Each structure stands twice: as structure tokens, then as C-alpha cells.
Amino acid sequence: MSVLGVNMKRQLSLWFLVACFRLSYAGTELVPSPIYGVTVDDVSGLAKIVDSLRRLAHKPTTRIVFDEYVGPSYYKTPAAEIHKVSYVMGEILD
Image 1 (cartoon, rainbow, N blue to C red):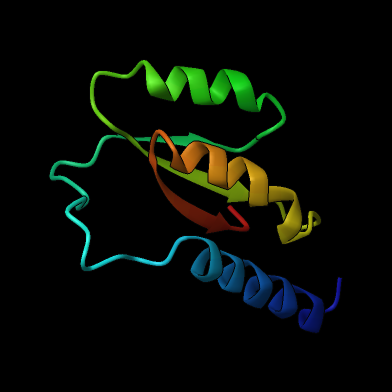
Image 2: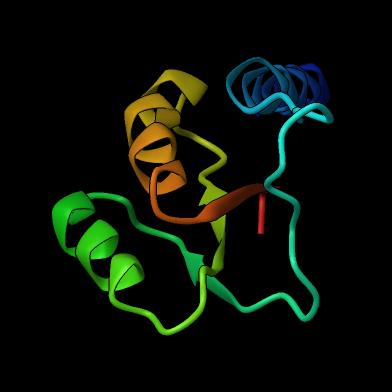
């Protein structure tokens, strides 16, 4: 993949994160300290992932690893579903 292709992928991934999960400063929900987190590098088992996250003792922050050769639209639904039970952050090209 060309350098332009990798840069385009990073820009699209960053745009996706900003568009889907804007921070709300007016809301009462803030990221707690300490942060409890998990990493998800495969979202194909989405129902099991969401169920597992829901059962944790503390609301986690889920780091979703974006695959280099997968378009950002693939992650839209999984990220939205995970966001219902967890804070979400994205990792580009782990």
C-alpha cells in the first residue's frame, strides 16, 4: 500500500471517531479515574463482546483496533453497540 493510502486510511479513521463519538461537555458522564480497559482487535463476535463488557464490575474503556485493510464503515455498528456499555477509543494500525 502506498504512503498516500496509509495516510488516507488514518484520516478516514480519525474522521470516523470524531463523527461518531463527539465528547459532550454538557453531559454528566465523565471518564472515571482509574480507567478500566480492554482491547478488542476482532469485532466479528459483537454480541458476545457487548454482553461481556456489560457484565464487568466497572464500566470499561474499550480500545477497538482498526485493521489497516478494512474500511472505517466496517467499524461503525460495532463501535456504536460497544459504546452503549463502554467508553470507546480507537487504535489505528496497532
